[in-house]
Length: 225
Image (cartoon, rainbow, N blue to C red):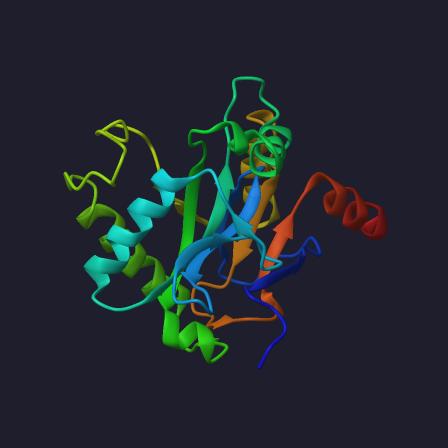
């Protein structure tokens, strides 16, 4: 059994495969996953296996998506707290470390992958990312208009953005990557994820997912000079 809970990325090396690659916006929050713990309860977890509290609205929506799937699921994404300051990483860290203890809910789960819980337990799935994202989109869309209020909410989740699909774009070359990355940085995001859309999900660190940040951009540009 793998020691990793999620599929992890390597740093981008400044190259793009012939024919292009899939690209996703990398939000500046915390990696977050939904799955059933050893006690049989579904929760939100950090990539290091720590439970996250204070986002019951997100948990409720993901449970509805799991019900729609008809079997236990694993959802992977990034959870972000928006407090109006623009520093979403600091806001996310503050909320999930101490802020939630005062009551209430916060955060949007930016979903980018899904597989069955059984597949996740076995270490991953050979199903291609493009197919996994199609299933994820179906589950998000199918539960968008459900009027199933969670207990104690009195309907205050209505209209809240609990779960949002992470869209992908096809990037043909380095220029495409850098153009999109600069737009993301200008909007306060962390960068990009470059993903092989035919790759399986593996609970390990692989070259199928590559992270584009300001830091590794400077590194590969220096090495190429």
